[in-house]
Image 1: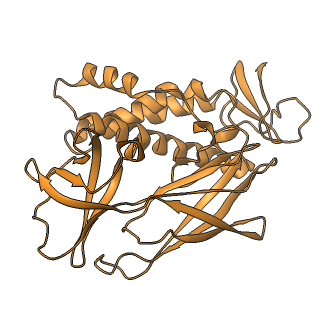
Image 2 (image 1 turned 60 degrees about the vertical axis):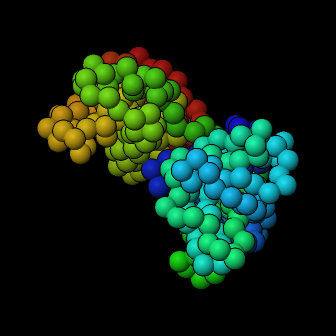
Length: 313
């Protein structure tokens, strides 16, 4: 099922062709009912059925207000439930992050302690903000489909009503360089002896991909192509690694950040010189339409999307 999930990339989501895509999101506020929404594909609007987890009653706090004892909740029903949530009462809606579940005591463990005790005389509930819906399946690529979500939070939340809008593109292959958190961690410690939080590597890896994708789109969009049309995205591993490493130093070391960004841009341009476009879809590179200067070994991108081969010029 994991291969069906939409993937977030540089401000939009991508869905694979030939499967029923699963779109998931953490809502900004807790809601008593599932959200509503639709997606517009090629001018046709399709309503989506959203699913959320049911609220769980909290009976007491312990362990410095990091442990939430849950009322009459079978352990097997809570298995795998973690992430963005909120503690909700009649007067409070407080965001929290569930990192584990203790099945022996039926308690949810929070990443950070709550700054208050449970209000007297008010029922308290743990509400997960996770929501998901199945999108229509497609066999042909299409870009920038508009997906809209509407939701109504609990009365104790900050907003009385909310809405979110996203762009979803259906693609044959989803751009991925193959760089992992392990790769980034190993490279980071060649540059710095300062320890870094594990969560920072994950955020930097996504931030680095967003930077790389933004650079690629600037080069490809005038050909009607995008990063997902690159048949050998692994060739951009070095650029992705440099952009991600730069994100680790954005605040702590601006000079290192600037140096890594410059190196990443150079690495991206070097690889772009190896990419040509088959605009007329005849299986041959158009020598008058390279993305950058000519190279002896280039990657051919077909404008019909999803086709690619190596060419010796």
